[in-house]
Every structure is written in C-alpha cells, then in structure tokens.
Amino acid sequence: MAAAAATALESWQAAAPRKRRSAARRPRRREAAPQSSEAEFESDSGVVLRRIWEAEKDLFISDFWSSALETINRCLTKHLEQLKAPVGSLSDIFGNLRLDSLPDESDVAPDSIPRETLVTGTCHLKCVCYGIGNFATCIIARNQLTFLLLLLEKCQIPRSHCWVYDPLFSQLEIEVLNTLGVTVLSENEEGKRSIRGEPTIFYMLHCGTALYNNLLWSNWSVDALSKMVIIGNSFKGLEERLLARILQKNYPYIAKILKGLEELEFPQTSQYMDIFNDTSVHWFPVQKLEQLSTEIWEFQEEPDYQDCEDLEIIRNKTEDPSATD
Image (cartoon, rainbow, N blue to C red; front, side):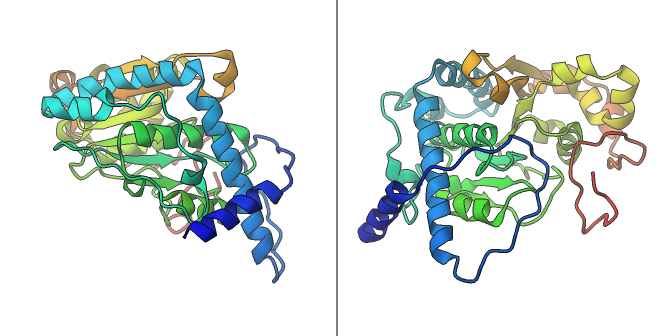
C-alpha cells in the first residue's frame, strides 16, 4: 500500500498542470478514450486529486471556512438538541474540532484509505450531496466538493456515509469520488430521497428549485423534516425572487414549509463570493412544524412539473425518456 501511494504521489509531481476550463455545467460530449489510456487516466485522476487537495488547503486557512463552520455549528447544535442527543454528542461533533490541523495530502491520494471517524454518541449523521457539478474541470464545483470533504471530517461523518450524485459526472469524476471514499449513487433520484428516520444533512449548492421541492415531498412529515438539515439555496431568496403564485403552483412544498423552518445565511467573502453565494443552512424546528395546519400535511401529491417553464433539473430518463430539462 505504501509503495502504491508513493507511486501515486510521484505521478502527481510528474503531471503537468492543465488549463482550467469554463465553469459551465452543461453536459459536454466526451470523446472516446483510446485503448491504451490506462496510464493517461491514472495521470488525469492524480491531477484532479492534487487540485482538490490544493483547494482544500486554501479553503481550510480562509476566514470564510471558519465563519461558515461557525454558522453550521449554530444550526447543528440546535438541530441535535431537538433530536434529544446526549450532551456528549454535541461536544463529540463540534467540541473537539481539529482546527489547527490540515488533512494530509495522502488523504486524497490514490490507494489511500479515507479517514472515517464515527461520532461517539447515539446521533450518527449521514449526508447526501446533489448537483455538485464537474469538479474535474470547474473550479467552482471543485471548491464546493472541497467544502463537503472538510464538512464531513468536522461533523465526523464517515465518507462512506455520504451519498453523492450529479447526472453530469464523467467517468473520471466517478473514479475520483470512489477514491475519496464517498458513495456515488448510480441512479438519478431527482432529489426524491427519504431519510427513513436517519438524521441527514443534504448538501445541495446552486441546485434547481425542483430538487428542493422533491426532497421536501419525499419527507413530508413533522418527524422526517425535523431530522433534516439542508445546506443550499436560500429559501428566503427563492421566496423573494419568485412570484407567490408561481412558487405555490410549481413548488408547493417549498411554499408551504417557509413558516416551518429556520435559516442561517452563509458568510460572504470576496474570495468565495461566486462559489457560496445565496447559500444558507436550513433546519426545521418541531415547534414550528407542529404549528402548521393539518391541511398542509394532508397534501401529499407528487410533483410532476408538467406546466413548469425553465425547469432547472435533469430528469430521470428511465422515467421520462422525452425529458431533456
């Protein structure tokens, strides 16, 4: 294992830096790789991993990271108290953060074993990440992935307990994610994932509004929503940008939950303005959820977006072959 890691590190040093491409997230046609591309693939994956590690170093020492972590800490502390987690669990997650240490480069090296430190309490958080984009070619997506990896470490969520999906992932990016130790989903869930009673953080930066609406529908109960935290587009911002009738017609679950959540905005710094803009941490206090009317909870219709213009998600082609949104 040590020899393999050393070989991988040598390949990083030997690989020439490549020009960064546009941050556009539309799918691109990829040319077929030649049959003798194994060595080239290893070199490419090493370059991507190296860039992830470099981005991680920059983010870790930034004022933005410490401020964002404090924001998430405030939210998760309330969230875990709501789940009646023992006092020890809170200190396990945030009281013992190693803010003075940076993850080693070997943590993202091919053939390395990702660190997986379980929370030593009864509340084991899981994580789901949607729509992170083409991080191999897009610096914005790469920084968002870097933030996710640091978040997993600070919350002591094992990487194998983090599920990641984007329909635009290339095969290279899937291989890199597998190397990093996260679990890559093979199916486009369109955000329709039930937490099944397990406290879960959803990390969904710059995702389409329908994805959030689908997620809420899949967990439309006081019990499920009270166990969720969503890091993603500001729901307050959605309310401000969309006409009330459009929000209620096309995204009814978002419209109905606005009075049942609390939201903390991410800090804004010039260095990461384009990467984490319009991002907030959302959680759902039981007291607020229980104050919503019975009619709200009785509404269980699955979203279909038949008449929705400018739908900002890629649909599951196995369910709707004609959908190209």
